[in-house]
Image (cartoon, rainbow, N blue to C red; front, top):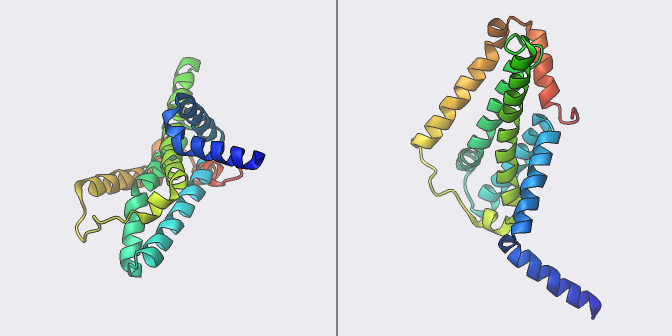
Length: 197
């Protein structure tokens, strides 16, 4: 009898958790802490897992062909992928060994704060998007992207443009920052190897 009461109470909390302000506050604090503690590599793994689930969703549940399923999977994860790349650009350009913030203490502290925001904000958005899919799995699995088209929408074009600019900035970072390619690569690995946190 006692386990039944617990089960009923737990279900009531699970069904109405969005109504509790404490839940939202705890969710925001926990999300911010996770985003601050883990590096971008952990979020790359999270995006990869989400993309695999989307691929399975589109091929098995919605019966899309492989090409259309890939297009839908990339469409759903495009913003997360670009945010990951933007976070990596901030990590490289505002790294303490880069010339952009290696000046005075005041400039360095401002650069560290900017680097933190530039890395943590994309992580927060990626984590929020992934947790939303995990917390509402039935809705996520049933939702099919009906807007898959051969032509790109403005949002997809903007996202792709930001991604291309960010990748270009990463590729030309050794020249702009006057750092060796191996140093840039070590900064990227520092951020992208999941267990470096």
